[in-house]
Image 1 (cartoon, rainbow, N blue to C red):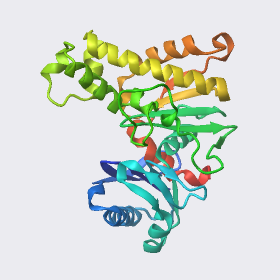
Image 2: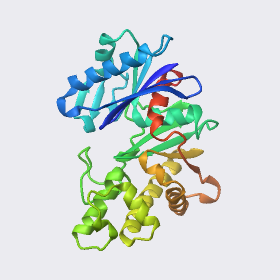
Image 3: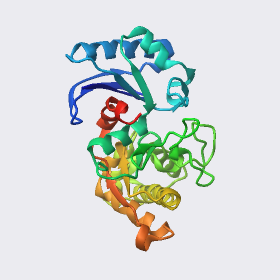
Length: 306
């Protein structure tokens, strides 16, 4: 058994995960980042203690963080969604808990879940792209998670694609996640509506990415153009990564993966059109197995990969 925590910008999800990757018990609390680091730390401690009381085994804790960690995995160097910089989260948690705590980027946690139990279980070389509020990434080469010399590897969402009409939360302009995330999808559609483009989206107050995909499937011109724009940039990114490290498989996870085959088919077509050697180096591109549970499952199994 292991305790896996998925620390998100809106919710903290925790679960007790067995050795087959099944979540036995699950709890969730709201992320109160607006109240500062100390409040989120306290909420994490309370949640972890509650989960630990529910398992009869001595177990460690893994936490997926939506940001960058130090090379030793102890400090949250940067976490824009929570407004954290250089927070000693591992030390702070372990001083409140009689448990070892391991930290990892949340997309890498999802990558571990898929490699251990899901869509890439039998693959030695794999990449995950998590498409949600932003774009996360995780890379496994020869069955080893790639963290990099400074702990900042696999930040695929911040690859520069080309100039865009708004800046990324990281401060740069042109990051992949400003083209290929749920946020990007919504902001592009809103920009087009503001400029006078006609669409059924105009009739919906506070439309979200799910609405855009549904109307795209129904043939709405703006919604379909927005989805095609998103998958075009994803195809470019996957082709670039493929040409660099040649993985066997890419897994598409995160909330947008709920669009299913409609999304997947477009990504595959765009990737094939951009690869240097599509005739014999086309990677398999699949949907993630675990959806929004991947972060918890992977975090609970960090000790197998770290």
